[in-house]
Image 1 (spheres, one colour):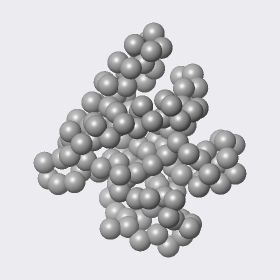
Image 2 (cartoon, one colour):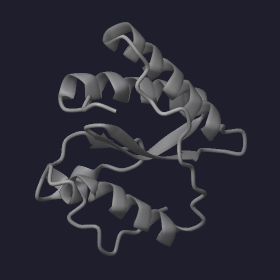
Image 3 (cartoon, helix red, strand yellow):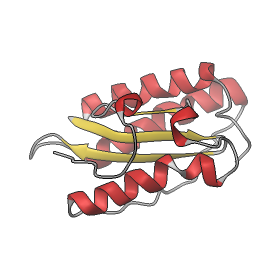
Image 4 (tube, helix red, strand yellow):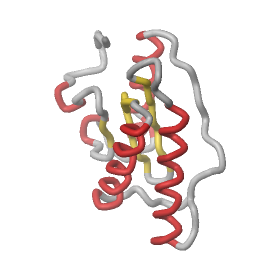
Length: 136
C-alpha cells in the first residue's frame, strides 16, 4: 500500500468514518493509529450486543469506497489480523506496541509527538508515560 496517511486531512476523514462505523456496532476504539501505509486499531464492544466485526467491516467498506472515489482503487488488504485481548495486561502490551510503532519506524522520536492517533476511550495527551497505566 502506498503512503496515504501522511497528513491531517486524510487522517480526519478516516477518523470520522471510523467513529461512525464503531457507533453503529456499539463499540469503542481503545486506540487507533494511522501509519503512512496501514492502520493499527483495537476495538472493544460496549455491551453484549456489540458487534466488533460489523464495525471493522463497515469501516473497511466506507473507506474502501472513499479510496475508489478519490484514488481510483481500493487500498486495503482483503483481510485483517484480529486478536482477542484477554486481560488488562495484554491490552497494555498492545497499546504500548501500537503507540511506539511510529518511533520504531523512525517517524518520530517520541510516541506523544505522533499526531495520527487517538481513542474514543482514552486521552493519550494526558498520559505522562505508559508505565503503571491502570485501565478500567
